[in-house]
Length: 348
Image 1 (cartoon, helix red, strand yellow):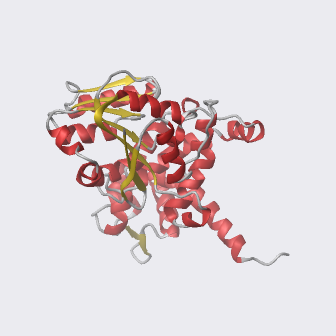
Image 2 (cartoon, one colour; image 1 turned 120 degrees about the horizontal axis):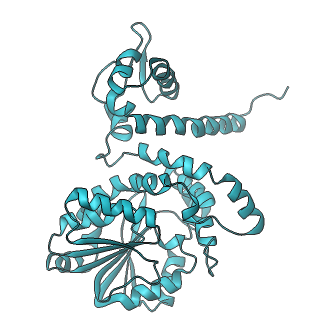
Image 3 (cartoon, helix red, strand yellow; image 1 turned 90 degrees about the vertical axis):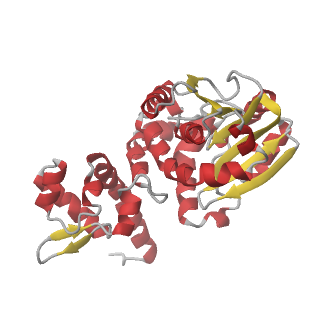
């Protein structure tokens, strides 16, 4: 019998994490983490009563969370507690560190396994529309805390003159807006400006329209189905791409369209994963996640468009800058960054 090795243990741990991700998705969707947050020690029955979950399943779910160290277990009274710092990650969607909603996208990714097998063999792709709708909502929710924490406070002020133009009633096109989180955050902060979100996913656009209605912003925020290389409008003061450019099969053509649609002193803001072309520079938690997502989502989505590019999400700044310059932009800079996101500015 082969003796265990550190590498084998690591792979088993990765397998455990892959299965645990489903329990995190369940905890998010059923409100289990939210019920535990700030509640102190709870018995399985107390958790079941608070959430409407069957006691046997509540107990088993708590066992899985305790085994991972997500919750603390006191065996004598058989109670479970979600520490406050864990609650910020698992239970509080307003926390900058919240990530639980990401796991609700896993069913969309795992469901495309057969299509990915074929794509890997024949070089084809897997369209975004081939995924379950949970990919739109799950990925949107994953990036939302970072947008809430940084977009208005840090990212927009790092761009040349953009805040002043939005306060004065500027025009914004949020391209590849998904379910509209980024668009609505900007619209709430700049009531004098007008915002138009575009995405090629009709499902995402309908969800974005509903979020706009709920937020009371539907009168000045529009969402329409349109591709990145053909969205309508001219003289935008800001065109924003949030984690979009690397998903395009023809990013140069899309960049040329952005160049044409900008006002003379307008800014194209490109937010991309803060990952790097050099593999060794991605050996951190965010890098490992991005590179895995690239292999099963970003690259296949771009490849499905049959364009001249399929960048993946860690092509690096040099590749992104080359696309902008090929499209006619002459001024490029890395405006700011977080551990997860890099924010670039391109101007004519």
